Image 1 (cartoon, rainbow, N blue to C red):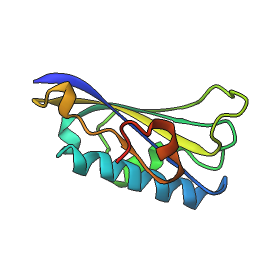
Image 2: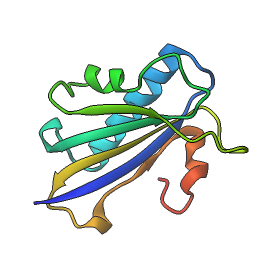
Image 3: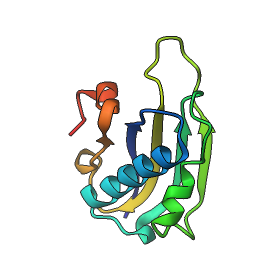
Image 4: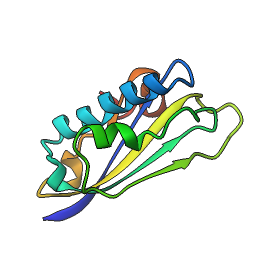
Length: 120
């Protein structure tokens, strides 16, 4: 088993608690599905949000998906002028037999523009 990092991001329409939770739930679910993971495979997850999102912690969505024993952390991204607004990002550290090239990074909604080279 190796430790790998999985990246992902999504965008919400507004700084709204329900939108943040819904989009984060979708993002985490897609990361788990595409990489054939269970919560036992996840070592930790770091969530970040752009400075314009303050209505809720995205980690709450992961807790709702059963991430009760996984360390989760939320932080704010650097407020770079012109950056894509209202974005939730994650970096999950996982234990897997997959080679790095087989890890599926997930970019959803408007966040696909962040990584057109790897967004599915």
